[in-house]
Length: 388
Image 1 (cartoon, rainbow, N blue to C red):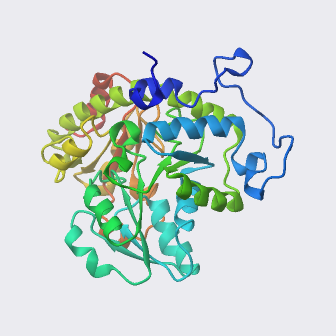
Image 2: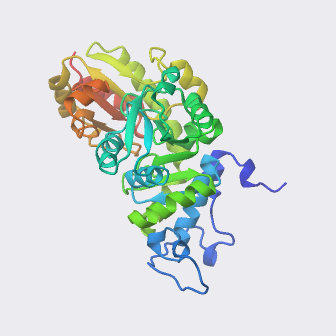
Image 3: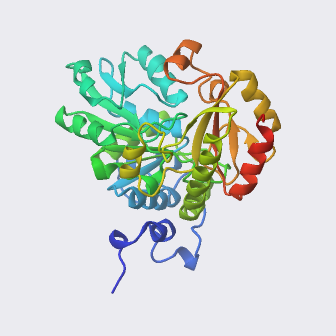
């Protein structure tokens, strides 16, 4: 029996999908093609010229195939950052005069893009409650072109009606886009419920080592071609060495993901019982408002992310951040080391206080990205940092 990619399980795909056959000069690890340009031997269109900015070096090609295999899509595209991927994807389906529906709680960078930059481009956005699909139709306009959601929202870990969003898009001829960064392809495969384009900040779980900035888009060949043409013009390509690092990081995603998922749930349970904590946001807890939906849509778990509201607000949160020893007080997430941050001062600092309040992001909210340390050491450290 010959094992084919279509029948491989995720851990095997992470290691073997997209690898060149035969191996280049017999190299087991994918070599770095540190060349900006390549010899042209035939007459090609602009977007097919072999040039690093056009995301078609051997390092790019191998990554595209691996990510597509993981997400179960026809193809994929890597970009210089998660925001480069999000911008290219959205601008490949929206133009001046178009209207976008978006989940009301989004990553701060995405929120700024669509509420500030898109306004200058003449693209309008209406925010909807991703948990109440019966309200979406009233916000449709003749010029509505797309709907944008996140699998797990940042930083509150909400799980919207993802199946409903995909169905709604199909019923109204909209392009459906989803940021799958927090879930990773191991937690959720959006195309399995009908999404058109899947987005990642590959800086996070896909790479997993806090040493590069990258993004990814996965979807049909037609949609990815449109996104690539947009990215080609924006110039947000990933350099070959970063491609190599992302390629290497992906191979351990399964090991990292399972450990971080299990550790985060243990830590969430500890925090939920602590008197200094007002609320813990983790879909694995029965107290989470979308706990049942998360169990159904993400049966392998919801990753290493959680957030919690400190009793005592900003001052209590800042004291806690100054006392933790193991987690590093830094933005980003999904790496081997645990990171802790206050979203009001980092990921969502670009929002006004009123916008943060409307999104449910208080000044005392702390976000924790659980790394691969021993969870008992993390719990011991959190215990000593929290007030008794």
